[in-house]
Length: 258
Image (cartoon, rainbow, N blue to C red):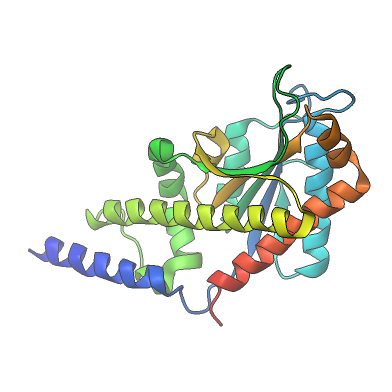
């Protein structure tokens, strides 16, 4: 009976907490992940490679964050042309107890479809969310202490109710990932007049191993002549980075409570 009562109380508390973020919660750490790198170039266009575009956009985003949001710690999974394993990218974010993970990529289509263009932002597919369990468990005690202590009243891995807690926490990450992804897409559309391909749920390995809200944003089709020029230009990269920055500012404002 005690366990059932505890679970009931926990569920009620979490449902209430979902509608009202924890008092004093702040976004303190963001991990920026430039896709590919080193011997893994990613997609190729007529004159450029995805790994190079992703790195340039990611570094510009990081510089903007440091300038305009100096209280937030910025961590890069790579700052140079090196190969970082997918599992390690998520591991870096988990070890840093990050509050948000942003992976930057370029899209591509095979010959015959090179007219396709636009931006889209991905979140971990719901059919693959079981793979987040290990990441959340590894990170749960610190994450809960840092971000959710006042919300969840602590975490006890020996208590059966903790498994329910992890499940709800995982769903909370999914919801926040989708909310942030929508903000990114809206920013691309309103600020840069980009063609939106929407927010999509996919079984992206790097995302499903992150124990925090996480997105992968495809900043344009490197296979499209027009967009390849845009995403390689200084103006294009500045616009993309600023649009992601504005989405971060809005997300931060929405979930933080003074």
